[in-house]
Amino acid sequence: MGGLYLEELSLSHFRSHRAARLELDGRPVAIHGPNGAGKTNILEAVSLLSPGRGLRRASPDDIARKPERLGWKVRAELRSLHQTHDIETWAEAGQSRSVKVDGKSAAQLALGRVARVVWLIPAMDRLWIEGPEGRRRFLDRMVMSFEPRHAEAVLGYEKAMRERNRLLKDMVRDAHWYGALETQMAAHGADIMKNRLVTLARLAAAQDGAKTAFPVATLTLQASDDKPLPEAEDDLLAALRDNRQRDLHAGRTLIGPHRADMSGVYAAKDVPAEHCSTGEQKALLISLILANGRALSEDFGAAPILLLDEVAAHLDAGRRAALYDEICALGAQAFMTGTGPELFAELGARAAHFDVTEEAGASQMKEIQ
Image (cartoon, rainbow, N blue to C red; front, side):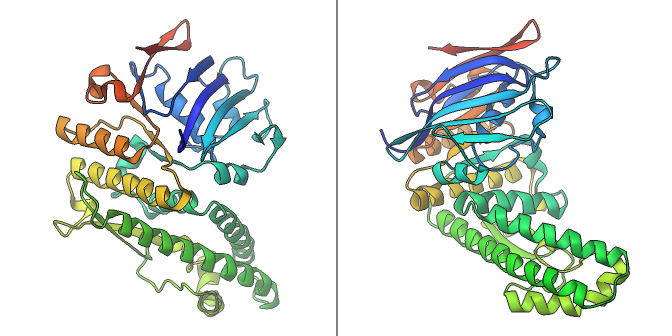
């Protein structure tokens, strides 16, 4: 069987799981149990098989099981396009996260070369009504699913911007101090903007004409303060130079891709996403995740691993069944959580089912045949 999926997942001292092991076969994975039992922790462990801080954006020390705080480890056997990779990621107490791919130490970026992981969690339900930062983060995660090196451009831009902001706060006016930093920001910023716009185009194409029960979301990118949003490197460099005096008064950089905002519109109704009902907003998010999956399937050669935490919330039975049909048609190994098995009844034998409970302060998992 080709595609992209986990064949095995093992956790050690990972949040509420003292030890856990799942043997999988590529089917979607339905995980159910009461709130607080440790379902989302499984999804978080899978999210750490991709670059970054995972779906909770937690520090390594926050992940370690308490009260032991011995550090933690996640190991996975990943089937990726007819090859099997052994992946390990862990952190000792007080240390940063480490990664090994096929027994060799690797940078986190290497994870993006062998796997693609996309997630939707309840915190994202407020995406359309929260501030621009959350929407930028949501967009950049989708960008990184297509182009893992996007993370390097973001980090490079933010590092140079922090140094420029320090100069601005200190009221440094000598242009020579700004030149190299603004050149770096312009180069990285142009890459960021290009990657974001390409991703929006890929999502639009993946939604266009797709037979789906979920509404199409029309996405655009603009400045959060309605100021011009330069895209080309030369334009961004000129804007940073021209805006320096204004930035000095503000004590921070007021122009660039860090000021971008993604807006969404429910296309069929021509209604901004922030004005839609809670159920419609959720459906628009699911539509984007499915579009991301369809586009990645064409780009990477296999559908990404999907992490859908409490995905049934705000979905009626009909739309829930439609979601499961689309996941199976996509061929994606989707890890889904919910409070009860009835939420996954429509999946039947098309998925592996696990029950999670808490006993003596530790999460316990059992596969339901």
